[in-house]
Amino acid sequence: MTDWARLSVSYCQYEVSAVPGVSGTEIYTLGDNLLHIGGPYQFTGFCGIHTGWIEARVRVLSGPPTEVDVDWDAISEATLWSPSGRMSVVGLMGGFAEALTDVAVPRGLLRVRVHARDRLDETVRTDDDPPEQHELHIWAVSEETPWRTVLADPEGRDWEQKPAKAAEWAMRSLVPRPSGRPAILPPLPPDPYEDDTGLSRVAVVRYRPAPVEVSVGMLPAGDLEVRLERVDGETLAWSWATADEPIFPHPLTTLPDDEPSTVRLTSGPDGFTLRHEGVLGRHAFALGLVWDHLLDTAGSYPWMETLRERAAEATALAEKTRRRQAERDAERWGGAPPSDRVRGLPSQAWSLARIDRRLLDRIEALPAARQREAACWAARRAMRVAGLEQIGWIADALADVEADRPMPRSFTEQHGAAAFTRLMSDPEVPHTTVPLYPDPKAFGTRGVLVSKALDTRGGLDSQALDTRGVTEMLQQAAAFPALIALAEDDPLVAAIDAVYSAAIAHGDDRDRFLTDAHTALH
Image (cartoon, rainbow, N blue to C red; front, side, top):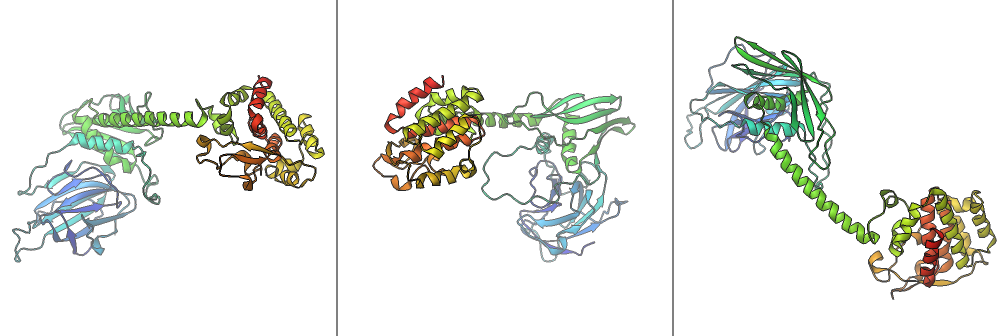
């Protein structure tokens, strides 16, 4: 037992929590004048004083109390799940006492009984009144049972209970969806207690004074569903599954629990008992709220209305995003975008589409062998127009590819960097230039060219750029990437890159080359 500690409270509230910072259902949903349940890990306690100090202490018991201590004004209790074996009592606005922080408790399912006395508002409290005191008794249990009022405060009010709202929150907590919003802050570190599967599974128990009919079949839960199948007259099998017709554009596929559990139904002289056995401890509270609603309002699924609303919003947003992306793709590709494969290639597909969209489609439609032939045809045309066809080591490399022999390593390693260096230093290589007219839509800023075909492979001398809208570039440097492209393992990449580089190397004759390419690749 801890010593009495002074705890600062605000708005007549403090929180009892086994996992700090976890949100749950709102207060004023289920509870009485002393406590309101908030989730599997926490509940809110209510004081008489609005803002000020109370005295509180915690007693951890080896078992349930044998009798009710009547030396209190109000007593209520609820079940919590403590995966860490720690529990804290803190003021609503962050007030804390060291003795009430991280109190050692049994790991797993706990019953917490709250005792309170002398709960006076500060407007009527005098210096002669004893301090307001709250005492928590905690013991381990294996069954999740509903909160209850043990001793009602005669001065208390009757809070409206909202079991349907609680059931909605409960089911949505069991099938949570990511928000879909970009994170404003860095993600929090993983919760060290999130994986509590090592703890024993527990039971959810509910009593009713009269027999209750439990329907078998399917329990809808948005993209998921619960299947209740009868095993015998008193036993049902509960299992999670994906729904046949999911409602969200990106359906959930992860089940809350991969293991089936058992629901036992018994009737006796004291009434009807439902025991849902073998459930995960962190799910017990939510499942209890679901059962409370199902037993009292058969066939009603209040969570589905909210899930359908969220699904409709998500569907509308996904469609809006799809339309925007389609518009951007159409502008980017000069029409309907090519296949996912082409868009994912490490190639000059987009650059080729900007100068001849139909030619890109024609290359993609070719079988692999014809794509390889197209790459060789384009490379030879590029070498010819740049005066490189008769340079011995270049002609040999092209002949090797056309004869299905491996290219020299200088062409295949590091994107042909060694071969390009040799090109720029070989005195036999001619030096001619061709004009290149930047496309403002393709490159964004007039006179500034950014082209993958002419960067890492060295095809563009940065000193050749000007800002007048026309770039004079070394023709041999523009053509050479068409030959290096033949080293690509993927014939589609080789064909796209070779054709694009050959087109650039033709300068003002680019349109004639493209016409020839359509004919050659038909």
